[in-house]
Image (cartoon, rainbow, N blue to C red; front, side, top):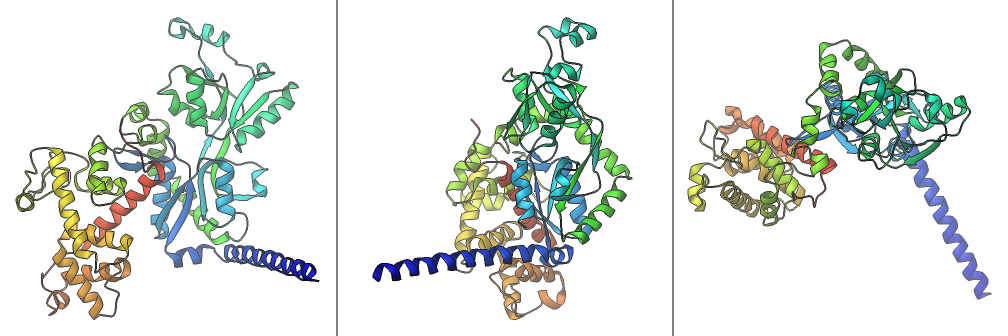
Length: 479
């Protein structure tokens, strides 16, 4: 009897867990169903998944760049929302994030085809390209004529029979090669790998593999810095490239997105943007630069100093790097019109109070900035218990001086807002300090202040920091 009761209890627990799990999945699904453009606007931000590479999204000289990134910025500005980006270079995982509701939009160069239409809704096309074979030019190709080079390369798709061709797993290139294999009546050994076309192009250039497939617009960019690769053998007709939303219950978002794409593609801005990333001879300079973070893991030449310095205030070094980028663009000898100097834009008087010659070296300039940040953190430690929230107040104080931030906290509290929250609370009252109605309030000690620069200062540093986290590993350091 005891055994029977025990088994019944186990069954009840398992059954309850199953029903609970089903209930949770149903709840998630219901939330996704209800989450169209109206809900996104209410939330205040557009959440997007994109991939990172030399054309879509990357960090160069400390700033985010990329064709999809700049398009996303334009679209999010158009609908008046903040932009939150997550990166995923595995297509299957990107589709999953979209379909389970972790993202509103998939902003990748997706080839429109009938198979994918079963799982997602495509936007209006954002570009046009075709699939091409990536292969290596023959040895001594520099001294050959075009005809001689062509004679040693695959120029006829029929010659792909019995060849091994590498493609990104989950990409439309797989489907095209399967169809091509059927068309030519010979087997093509299709090898799917979990990384994207740019890595495959590099592998061909390094003689690790012989053949791969990529989109022609991506191949053209990569050919500028891998002169030994050839991308002149087409494997498909011209194909539309688009973004995607969930298959169901994204009608309003898709309508807004499509209307914007149709209008934007007629503008000069779009033509210049496309040329910037797909027809730019400087692409090779960018990718080979130490400032191209995807390859180097570096934000600047000062990363070693920044990482060591950040440890003393227990900051992620990428956050400190974003602050320095905001202040000086990583220029060690820049001086502002107010006299602030160096990487961290320290005022000479502040340097003297700290006992540091801020002009003697970049290391000393950072040292002074870190000491000031440490003092600010100590000032706000008890006032702002939440660490992430406290960073906003420290950053604002670094720009405005702590007196104006303390004033804004007092104004917020006096007017029923939370003095320990930045967004929609203290930031609002810092902006009001340019109004005599508020800077003459008895709780205000530091007088007039135009707070818009400081509010933007905080937002821009944290936004750039988010981009750094998307692409640069936390433990990345220059070698």
